[in-house]
Length: 203
Image (cartoon, rainbow, N blue to C red; front, side, top):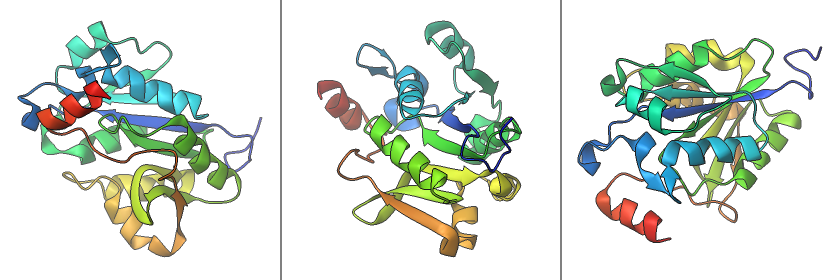
């Protein structure tokens, strides 16, 4: 069996899909329609096609409806009952469930439909080449997804409060963070408003 630091070790994907879509009229982001299916299915497909596995999905708002409506076969589906307190709780719940044999976890947001398998694959390639912290960059600016090496998971969880996510970890270890340019293969925009939803649905 490969050790957690081996190039053969799996990289888990953690899809954060708990948001309630407050600016979208309270429509849970996981269930927003995208290419005819719930948005969470698209996020799972992207990380899988990019090379991640296993896949963990954290649900919150309308989680029973999401479980009933979205095809999440093969995923480890986790609940964050405190999802309204911010992304931090979802990140902590997901990081606690990452299998011990994984060398890293790639954290993806459900509301970034412009992130592509190619962007995920670039982050995994950077990790295989030695990066223990990496983030997709767009024109040199840090964005999502973010890859966190196994040795940093406890620190990431400790700093995940409110909507901060992994920002505390990335700020504390900025000298170790590798930015992986992805602007030519992905779009970083969040899907937060009705106008965003209309634009992505039309696209």
